[in-house]
Length: 171
Image 1 (cartoon, rainbow, N blue to C red):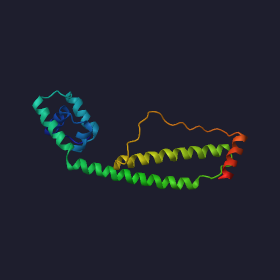
Image 2 (tube, helix red, strand yellow; image 1 turned 180 degrees about the vertical axis):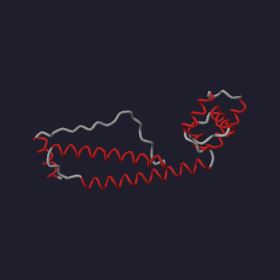
Image 3 (spheres, helix red, strand yellow; image 1 turned 30 degrees about the vertical axis):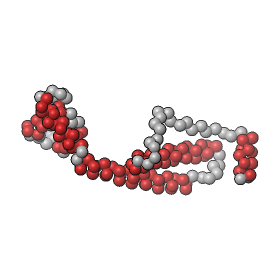
Image 4 (cartoon, helix red, strand yellow; image 1 turned 90 degrees about the vertical axis):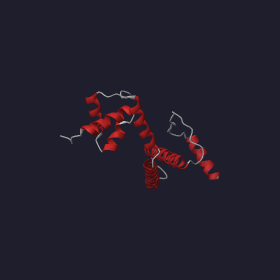
């Protein structure tokens, strides 16, 4: 069996639920599992807005104060450092992967695999750059779109191959 929660703590948890705190925030505040807090809520049939208005206002004010606290700033700072570390690690892995990709694929199947790998690398770099830009408020935010770019891989015709080779020789 899990640890027993005293009635005073249960009352406070129920009041916080009615005041608008999330179950996740309450579980973190009291060091309890999310499911434990949810079970307390279910057992007591407490729904948001079911307590007296003045008590709800008191807990809502406490919630607002907690959102402007130094703890929130410290958490945001920690998340930023974590995002930057992950972006750096991602870039290191991408560089290692790039070194492993062949410059001249041997056949169409290998060329498709290289194209897919490059597409994945490009997507990862874009996500990394978006994270950095958002973290440091660099430039304009990227335009949001629900559409994903489409990667089309096809075999080139002989005439196209000759044209590309000729263009390469000219440059």
